[in-house]
Amino acid sequence: MSNIVLYWHPMSSATPVACALAELGVTHERVKVDITTGEQRRPDFLALNPNGKVPTLTVDGAPMFEALAIEIWLGEQYGVKSGLWPATGTPAHLQAVSWSTWSYVTYGAPLVRLQAAKDLGTPDDAHGTAARKNLDELLALLDARLSRQPWMLGEAYSLVDLIVGSVIGYSAYIGAPVQKHPHVMAWLGKVQARPSMQIDA
Image (cartoon, rainbow, N blue to C red):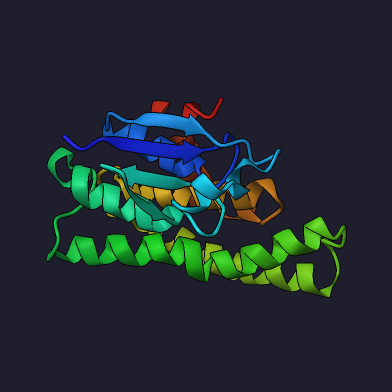
């Protein structure tokens, strides 16, 4: 079994990775990196992640970074056997990679713009308003999908629900109009109620 170490900080972009490890039941060590005091900029940490950010994961000492890359790797490495990630070469696998990437890239782009407007104290200016409109349109697409099936890939919960749900949940926290979409809200409540999602302390 591989020796896996997660470098993380609570309430950060490392949270979904910690939740994924818990959902998959992967034995690992967790090392807290205090991003409030600049530990992520120490030379020993930068040697693992040149971006100086969490999450960072090492597998038998070899590092990887970027939350989405880590989550997909965990799914493919540990989730297929447990039924939480579809096998490579299946139609479901194509959907898993597509929707996971959608959440971080397509949905993530206007989410970053909304976060920037919020950080500047101007969430209702033209930039913030445009970002919320874009997010609303994307949430409508997700709502339509979830009106036809209970989970992202169909009838069963998968790691894709955790990945997409983590991004959508954060977006609701900073003001995305998630509450306007009933199927998304019902699904998100189920995702957030899972025991694996309660570990960020």
